[in-house]
Length: 118
Image (cartoon, rainbow, N blue to C red; front, side, top):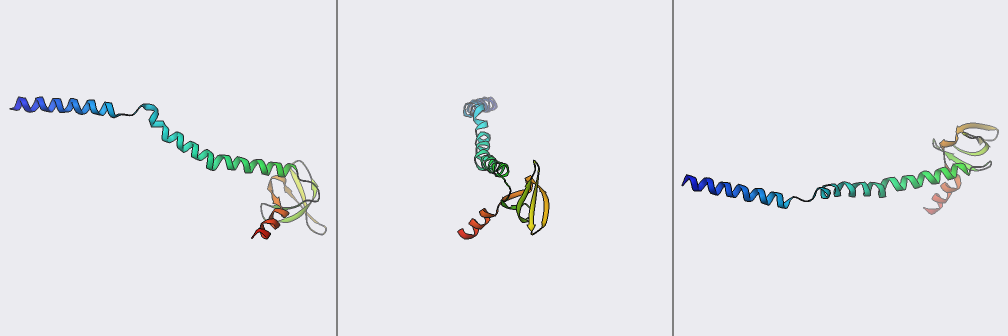
C-alpha cells in the first residue's frame, strides 16, 4: 500500500511538472507589459514635452524688438534689446531690466487671447 502511495505521488509530481512547463508563456511575452508602458510614456509624456520645447525654442528665436512678453517670473514688458542670451525688457517708461532669453515664457498676446477665450 505504501508502494502504491509513492508511485501515485511520483506520477502526480511528474504530471504537475509537465503541466507547469507546458503552461509557461514564451520569454518574449514577459517583455510585452514593459513595451506597452514605454509606449504609453512616449505618447503621453515625451512627445508632448518635445513638441512644447520645440514651440518654445521657435518663439525664442523669433523674438524681436518691440514684442510684448511675459517672463517665467511673471514680469510683463516690451523687448527693447536682444542679445544671443540676454533680452532687455522695458517694464515701465525708462525702466529697463535684463533677463536671460530662456526666462521669457510667452507673448502677452497669448495671455490676452486666453483671457478672451474664458
